[in-house]
Length: 335
Length: 252
Ligand SMILES: Nc1ncnc2c1ncn2[C@@H]1O[C@H](COP(=O)(O)OP(=O)(O)OP(=O)(O)O)[C@@H](O)[C@H]1O
Ligand SMILES: [Mg+2]
Image 1 (cartoon, chains in turn red, orange):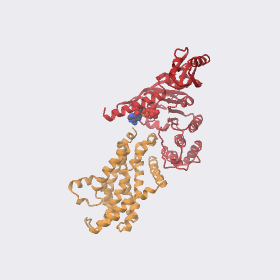
Image 2 (cartoon, chains in turn orange, red):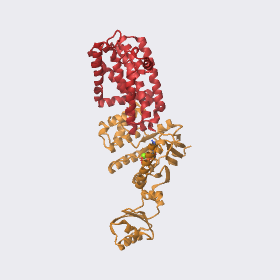
Image 3 (tube, chains in turn red, brown):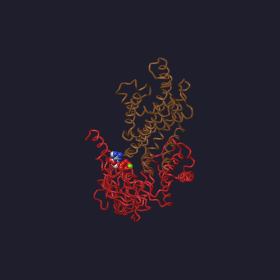
Image 4 (cartoon, chains in turn purple, cyan):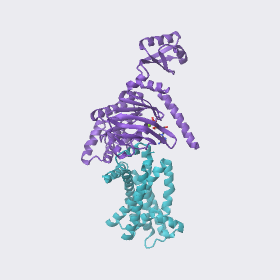
């Protein structure tokens, strides 16, 4: 049986149009009540995986179950237990917020005598009561996201799938969205699966994180466990004045010091904070490198990604864009 | 239950129209030209033999179906837009069957198109079209327009599934609406057409819809009206079934 497993993914593969291996053999298990992040750069395959789990796409190979229901063979049952907010906006902007929820409530089959209460509660919970009768066209991005969440939460799903729930939102809107999701989850014990390419979001809100790159899982664990991959110690972020090369020369060969990013600001991993900081600054000053700013921080998932792929998430994305452009050209040429 | 959910899509459409009814009025322009200018002039020159009825009366049902069929067949553009946003992805993960979704959206397209029936009657009657709009006849006309537009909307959904982008959709829409109109009995009796065109007009659903409409509003021929309505209904459900079978492909 399920054994407390909410989402089970086995060797899942999804190939688009016979060529793009968007998901390339993913296996994982999300436990009941867990908050799980799928983290990775653009094109990592996060959306594709979520679309298979929400019964929109049939996998090319492998299997997946949600609440014990197979996503292909029992798709109708899966649809009955999930809530889903896609990466793109999914409300009608020529209706009001209330009307959007009304249409969704009717499609979900919420009984007519409960509809009004269910909708008003959802709007209230998401802080949208005031705006309920305005056309969605006049909403901010954060309000639209909260309306979409309201439409998903209204029917009390067992599992909530959120694809990049805060993409494009400013920090205040992001934290408002998250506070609503967390409070809801606290109350109903819903399992939450979300995609993100914001490291800090995965670190802060997820209990476990699955790091993906190019369709594969490259690491999985709690944020704490993943941090251990980069080892104990601290990361120094140093903004130097002028030439980063001189600084790199100064640092090369220093004991207990690993340069993780050679762009200005440099990122340097230190095994031992107390001795390391003095040693690094000493070496830089000795070579006459001006130091503008030093930030000491604990290692983050960003460093984990860097360590696992040799690239920052931005570099991986830039590469992904180049590849995507190349593939598009190849397709246009018919090759 | 399934019907209630299907009708929700009609409600969606009506709520949209209520927020922005301008398009309902914009759509009156073309029929005014067809009936008011083309119809009046051709009536006067008596170039096209239309039996016992005058030309203006004859083409009113044809023009009505021309404009409602265009509205119905353009419905897919909305699905193309919903495909680009996340709406369709979301709707297709709701606990609602594909057939219910397709049926609901086809009914929604039909409801949108139906507004045109009343607009055209408001244009044609004052211009002198001799139409019987007593309750049973009008009701039959409503049924015919609704059933036919539902099928044409289903056809539009099929087009959206395979065309996927706005440009390609508009391309095919333009490529087929005019031929459907001219190769039908909309503005001349099919007996006047060359043989190959006649053959085509007999498999053209518009021909049956327009015939049923003339039976209801002009000739008062109930039996022939119901026969043509039956053909229309068969065609509409077949298209709805076909569209629902492939609906999922729209978000691939
Ligand atoms: N419908 C599609 N048809 C063909 N290829 C697709 C389709 N959707 C995605 N892809 C390709 O599959 C790969 C994975 O895309 P996916 O959207 O799953 O990644 P992602 O991790 O969600 O990225 P993002 O952060 O940009 O949302 C990419 O190379 C993408 O171009
Ligand atoms: Mg994505």
